[in-house]
Length: 115
Image (cartoon, rainbow, N blue to C red):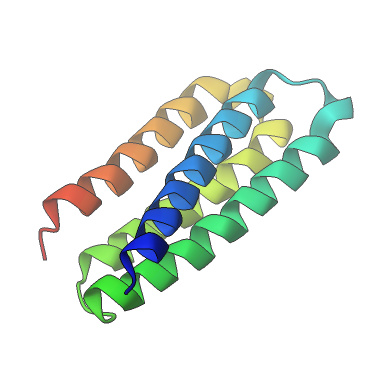
């Protein structure tokens, strides 16, 4: 993989993850009127995370490494929480902790690569 492509993919991936996490937390306190805007931004961020992540997995690791599956499951869980946040306002505290835990698991999987 070209080093410039790798750098661009990493920047887009991390920026999209930050946008996803920010709008997920925004969804816990946002008024119902802003639901469409939040869902659009989280959807775009999720798509960019998926596309850049798969390309980096292919280019850097050749689709090997079971740790990526754990990272994908954590990403899917985090992607779902933004939509749940508007419907389950009474469970905001637990969902915020779950969001942080899933994000931490995804980051640990990248650096530790346990399997």
